[in-house]
Length: 380
Image (cartoon, rainbow, N blue to C red; front, side):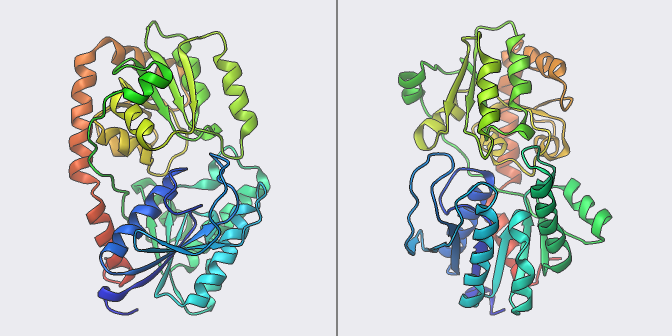
């Protein structure tokens, strides 16, 4: 590669630059725009087709956004084929552009990584989680994602993981040493509950918040089951949309029937999103499988009391600055939520501790610096 002042970087694996559809999209956008601001040449290869969450048409022309070159690539816009086709065509386009490094994000998009290696291009892979474990995938899809994991573990020049648990997994499974570089988050300013009050009747502190994709591995049904047995006049706000799992989303609505306290907002972004974080009594993430959830980092940055399952990828982020329950145990989740609702002073203290933790531990500037050093082969 060239000097650290002139790295040419390709990013592959996200759906589209600037989207908040998932954690991968947020991470790629933050890395790309910050690296571009430092003077590096960054290209993000976007999927074509419609936005999964909003259904809106996506721009299909090359453009520059935030100093980042955004190149849409051919995508077979059908369930199960979009990720496969876009990562393949993105890899071909990136090889043609001859960057110093192609940075792949997530396991499935790493399947064509060996093509870049054969073409003599340096590769970095970030594993955002063990995606083949996610309940939404069938046997064939899981096998394909596992191929991407193996390609990343055996072929990538450098491997990044977002948790010490995943670092241990790659060491034990493949004998591959990975570098732990967490995600980052910006400090968040408090926002009044203006638009969410007008739109959904939500006041500050009047609700618990689940914010994320409505997919089986995140266990929103567990939260609904636990919440329905809570003695509280607070509401449960479930913000997010499905992702290849529309039938599961329908089941959630059926499960919530009869409890007028439960509100489904659909996918939210921009001002309503910030207001939802700012004014929640507590944020709840009941997942069975995670990488390093961006929604958890953002809730902590907003100073919310956070309740998560005790999977290491969540518990390690909280590090005591929040509450955990036994993974998959609705009764234990109900108990923890009841305790949090019954002690507002504790909830407030945990929110302050959460904010202090992310501000001192999860800084985007450090993440970018360490990632660039890895591109240059300087990380240890």
